[in-house]
Structure formats: C-alpha cells, structure tokens
Image 1: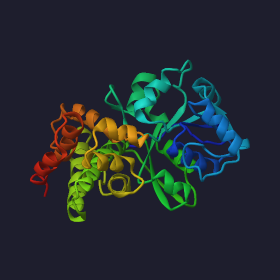
Image 2: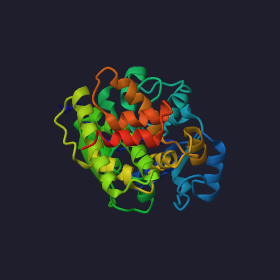
Image 3: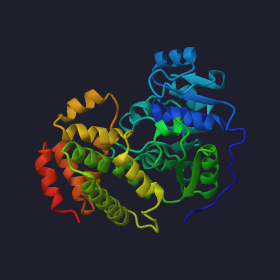
Length: 339
C-alpha cells in the first residue's frame, strides 16, 4: 500500500544523471526540458571533453544537440553525489557496483531514481533492493522508471509512456513531473517489485524472440512466444511478491512487446545473433553494447531456485546462454511446451 510522509518537492533541488549511454542521454534531454541545469556523471573524461566541444554525446544518440552551458559534467562520482539531491541512475546493471565502489560519500539521504532495467550480478538483486540493503537508502526515497521507452524514439520525440514506481505516493508524483514532457506521458505505481522484475524478465524474453527470429521462426510463432512470456512474468511476480498488479498494463506487457519486437532492442539483436549461430562471446564482442538480458537470465534462474516457478522460456534461454545448449534443439523442445 502506498504510504505518504512529509511533503516532498523538486523545487530548488539539484538533479544529476549518472551514465553516458543512450538512455542516460535521452533522460538528460527529458530532464533538461523541466529544469534549468543538470549535473552529469560520465566515466570517461574523453567522452566529456568531446561532448563539451561538440554539444553532442560522441558515442550515443549523436543527432541530439545540447546547450552544454546548462550541464555540469564530471567524471568523478563523488563530485556529482556531493552536488546533487536527486540521482538518476542510467548505467548498465553489470557495471553499477563498479561505479558505486568509488563512492566516498553517503547516498542515504539522496532521492534516487533507477532507470536501470537489470539486476545487480552476483547479488541477484534488483537495483532498488540493492541500494536499500547495501547503502541504506530508505525505500520511500527510491524510485524506478518502467515502461516501453526506447532512447532512440525519445530522441526523436516520438510519443512514449513511462511509469514511475515508488512506495511513497508524493515522491512518485514529484519524480514523474521530472520526466513528463509533451512527448513523454507518465503514471505512477507502488508496485516497485513487480515493475523492476518485469523490466528484468522482458529482456530475457526479448533474447528468446531474437533467437527464434534468427532461427527463421515466423510472426505466428513469435506471437505465441510473447503471449506465453507475459504469463511467465505473471506467474513469477505472483509467486515471489503478490500484488494487485495488472500485468496487461503498458509498464509490464507494453515493455515486453517493444523489447521483443523493436528494431532498437539490443536484447533482441543479441538473441538474433545467437539464433544465427554466433557464440555468446562473439555476439557480445560484435554488438559493443550491453544486452542486460544476458545477466538477467542467470540472476532470475538463481532466484527462481527458491520458488520453482514454471518458466520454460526463461529456462530455455538459460540453457542456451549458460549450458551451451543448441538453440535449434532447445527451441524445438520449447515449442512443445507453449500454448
């Protein structure tokens, strides 16, 4: 149940983006339309130098131009944490621990919004859970961004819908204001657990979709695969964290659909390469981007050992990626388990 505490507002608060990739860049564009300035942490100083010189991210969404006079760049995570009240995390989940290990300042009193759709490897936790346990950030100060929203389409200002998850209703409302624009509509939810795990799992099913596409399965089968995938998310969510969630809402089903079908989906692209015969290592090297579903597949597999929820698609992807099962044979076997 959503709980409401002290009044919370963003007026006068300093906002920071952490991450230098496409989603971080798209979020910076959104946030800058609502606030006068932002702080922006990127790991590589060379990327920052080029950005300041050209007004564009040299590595991602290069068609977007920024007025860099409104951006305070830094490659020092402690500097950005000291300067900002609200931190928006948009780094790949496999690297989150590496970034946070450099912290010498507490983040307990920060408002933190996770835009990371992945789990923290080795910890088998979603991001808000990890921040709450490891860094003692109060749950009401932790939010997350869910929903079908590719960075590339945000950059083109194509209409998109985001859901902000937070246990505190007032905090959720204020977080939503930060990322609301004429081309980004927002809603709020208290189902942080369900939203985060659905965001992780949809990447696994996008890999499955890509594998099947690479194996020349057609649209008819892809529709059946996706219909079964949302049922797996529903079973897993109900078993691990019962909640009156509507699994057909855009933050769950919509995010699954766009990740499974879109040309911009790196998880689908990764799966497609596996289906066409690439090894996992070769596919990762050639993509030069992080397919978070690769890591999420293992995390969900380990997590599910406690619950034993029936997840035949997720299990098939795990077998292919981690047990070196033949994609041809594994998907053939999977076809007999789908309805």
